[in-house]
Amino acid sequence: MKLLPFAVGALALPNVLAQKPNVPLSSSGRWIVDTDGARVKLRCINWPGHMEPNIPEGLSKQSVDYIADWIAGAGFNCVRLTFSIDMALNPDVDVEESFRIGASSGGVDEAALMKQYKMAVEKNSFLAKASRMDVFGVVEDALWERGLMTFLDNHVSKAKWCCNLEDGNGWWKDAPGYVPANSEFFETQPWFDGLEAMAKWSVGRPGVVGMSLRNELRAQVIQIPWGGEEWFEKMPAAARLVHAANPDLLISIGGLDGGNNLGALREQKMPTEDWEGKNVWDAHAYSFTVNTPNFGNCGIEKAQYGFLFGFVLADSTEQQGPLWLSEFGVGMTGGPNDGLSDEDHAYLECLVEYLENNDADWALWSIAGSYYVREGIIDREDFFAAVDRNWVDWRNDKFKGMLGRMWNVTQGP
Image (tube, rainbow, N blue to C red):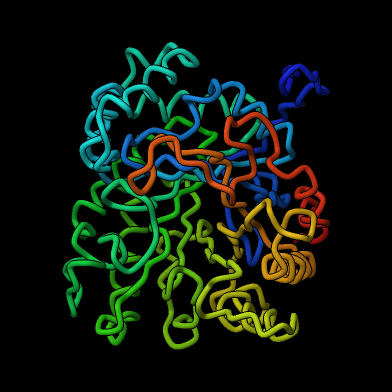
């Protein structure tokens, strides 16, 4: 146990108590538990690392230590750290070259993006001699030093912003009904190889407690008829590879239709016994999520959540398991409800009530107050982010309180 100083700006805050969970973690029924069988509730924040420069965001604004301190001080206990298959298969590219590649891939001026690199080196001098994977290692080390768990997430194959049906990362390229706009970059074997490489990298890193196999699987209309068949074929194959490479990892599996529809489990069994005691189900929910439309009625909204993914928590469900809402979020400013728009406020109130009642695990999207480059814009600000543009502190200081009892552990085995 270690006390770590934490400060935001000139304001000194109480020390962060770094108490590490008893790992590796496992799944038991609907719960994630530690080596003693006690519940561990994931209360995470997403830290994107899957964009064109292929390193975790924010290092041009703050040091790794500052960001890790902020996450711990804010009350989170884990990070969903996203990565691309590009990075996983090319981990030894040095950071400077990775920014140059990112400028070309992102369609932006190289000299302008290299200013972000130089700022990052000023804040984090190790970057001058680091590879892509070195950066992920430094980030993970800093998180674990503070007792923060890391849950790796394969967000995309080609490093870029996600997600829609035209980013080339949505659905397997070799699946029936190939649509280049949705599947151009999502090749199955490189995906397998990248997942395996990251799982092997995580061996000997106890703070890495799990891996999400793929973010927001999404089929085009002509691909949907084979959706369940492809999901039941490819996700278990990926899970077996990851489990063989590192049996300690939890394995998180998201559903169809943008990652929030696990309904196929009602019709067919996923062979989770092949990664026994490590399975976690994964879902996402936003106010704009297509298959959970807001009709102005929280009861209907919660029924949609239960029908699409919440049912996996029930004792009567054959494939019961932990449910991790690994993405949710709102626009943090500009609205009349303590910064939130009417739509986001109604959505969040209802979602919080749903998660308070079932005490599920969760991860907020995201910490990234700005991006090195996103969708052709350098140093782009994100108003959905928990922190401000310069990664100093909460963008909306009322938001943490809006999550209510989601922070608490109210149920357990």
